[in-house]
Image (cartoon, rainbow, N blue to C red; front, side):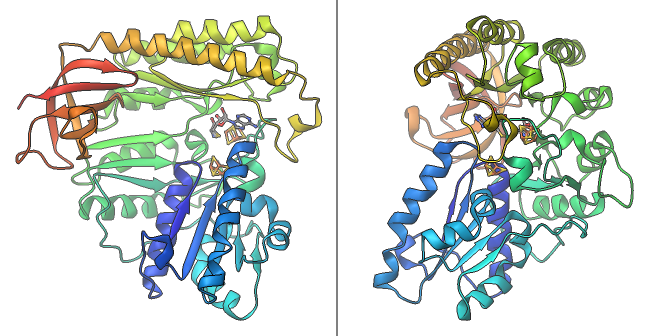
Length: 437
Ligand code: SAH
Ligand code: SF4
Ligand code: F3S
């Protein structure tokens, strides 16, 4: 049984563990009470993420009283951050594995059966980054993740990721191609390339040099692939060649998630993002010129230490200029061991929360404004699954990553199909519409 928190990389890691454990004779259950092995794949990006895991551990530990043979493992970023400490705090834990131990999950469980807790938080810095291709017949829906790079070397001053995921390393392009091809052969139609900073692909760890835009072209050539996306991007490493890829590759969808964090140059510098607001805006202008219908989304942090009201306003101005379709907005949360946590967290919680509300309000109005442009128009979606939310029968995403609730098509439409929908109504970052084919 898996509980997965955090970003898509954790989703991909849980999926990999499922496959590795399947080959060792385990079968996944979706019922916690049935499980004799519970793996909690954790995130520690903000304090709230950490608290969620702590309270889940508190709930799960007592299950051992009912089933003493049950094992509990903690994996992922919080496991890496806490190591021995969390094993002492929760004596019910059998294993604590950092992200670099994932390939060895089956062996780790065997060891933990006789000597618990097993804590494995070493980074294997000498080894190249490889997720060896292995037999996998699973169909897990029309959209599939493929890891292309691990770790992060950017060390933004607020961020825990470089400490929890270690140094940046790229994965061999042939291995990536084979995994993408396997997933398409198993029925997926869309491949989402993953990494904390995908644009840095090819800088470190490859024996056969490949750049990110070359990798995009390679994966786009997988037979049967219909859609391709990537996440997450960093403005510093985003190249003109990648912009051209949007233009040239039909399967590369017109959406880009490009975190900016804030609009003030002084705060960007203190965040050690390595670029100015102007650099970001220039990139956006170039993108919009080359790919006129590109959809943009971002991440925003409000209340970074020292952020004045005037500096915060610059974030709002930037958001308005770019007209993001969607933003993920957060109040700054100090993380242990990061450089920013050494400076005083001096923006009062109340101010942070007011600023957060203001960005949310602005984003809502931008989303609404952008959404209106689609009303009455036909869009193409790739159907993800059946649903009865919003009075719909199915849902799926447009190339621009808007979620569409589709009415009609019962008995005709199935997951993975690309169908036309006439947009009737916009609700937040979703549309409701009618089946048109
Ligand atoms: N690698 C991606 C983002 C990883 S974390 C990138 O560089 O853009 C996802 C988002 O969480 C970040 O973009 C940031 O907006 C937010 N985040 C990270 N650390 C945070 C912190 N200490 N407090 C609040 N938000 C944080
Ligand atoms: Fe964190 Fe910055 Fe790396 Fe993104 S680029 S994971 S925000 S250190
Ligand atoms: Fe969280 Fe680790 Fe991802 S901290 S956001 S799970 S890389």
